[in-house]
Image 1 (cartoon, one colour):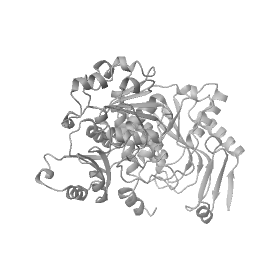
Image 2: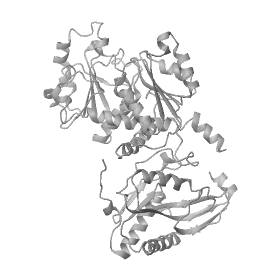
Image 3: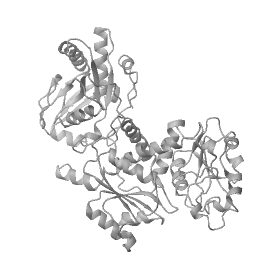
Image 4: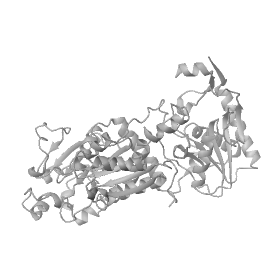
Length: 348
Length: 182
């Protein structure tokens, strides 16, 4: 799968070079827990490195030795297909060793505490711990007790930073600068760690974010501005919310969390909040459709929109591998192995 | 104290001479592909290719290579952890001229050789550098050299090019000075 580009033309045309950043600041972040404290510069650096990782993935043999000798452990207390698979692939493309641990079938099911599990995996030699947990904040606890890097692959209702980064990358790939662009996030924002992390990164780069959901599925304090999240627009009517949108992000209706009488029924929900062709027609022409997956087709998104021309859902999955490679690369530039190697060379 | 080792004119002449040497040694330009190593090898590769186009009347392909993911050491102080996309033409069966600004320990070139071979098997790889400052740690040598500069390991060699830095010179700062100016 190689793309042939017009290289010959370049030899004579005056080429444009990006200016060299004067002595780039080093990457400081040792853990990736959420995007709430990410600077614009950090977001831009992740995007830049993701471009390079995509190039690697486009090669016939996508494999580089960058993280040779690095051990990545994925520790998942919740089910996952795409996040776990893409972290595993991202690690392997960079040459790392990847070990997968599930809560079921490990000592966790024998009652081992989270801290003990983290310490055990570290003692085995983990340099990076990729962790998903059903409790909000669990990765923060792990990070406090770990010397290795901790990457949050989704914690409870709180955050899913790599999903937000891949969404950001996918959006930027299509629309370019997102300043002033209208992003509508539709669906169960209350239970959505994806929505929360996305709100941080999208607003940091100047997008106008609108949350659209039934009042029962909106996080508390959003409208009043009392919550911790940055200010977003709230609109409970999807037909109005989607008007003039540049990006429409549908969230999964989380059936496993729908036992609190949040909506009268799935049929009513889908009638009022499904992203379908009629509603999409009210958005800007060519608006992007995103979904973090897995999709409940016919509930929050119609089959034709999910697989239509404006859907970037598959691209999101592909970009997910590249973004996670960028994160693994950047985060392993700090502490642990990098510092030890530098100390051994007398460089620090 | 720092000494200017090459002026803009010196750099221009060195690039032109290297271009001629490359064509002469390869008996023409058939199958030549220029690969510049980021950052400053890229504009140098374009300049050499442009010079060849001027006197041979045919354009030659130029690509760029980021070797950050292939290094066996941490990037040298001050250099970026950021990786940029490599952009290479077909290199299988081609004669690659790898271009960089400074040849020092040879570790960056070693990384570049690994990276290149991941893209395919070239017929051969030759190395062109603007400055060779010595102190090799690997059995690597340049085929085309703009200028050999005797340095001490503690010296700081600065190459500045119009395209990347808005300035054009090669300077060597003596050891102590190099520490202070950083």
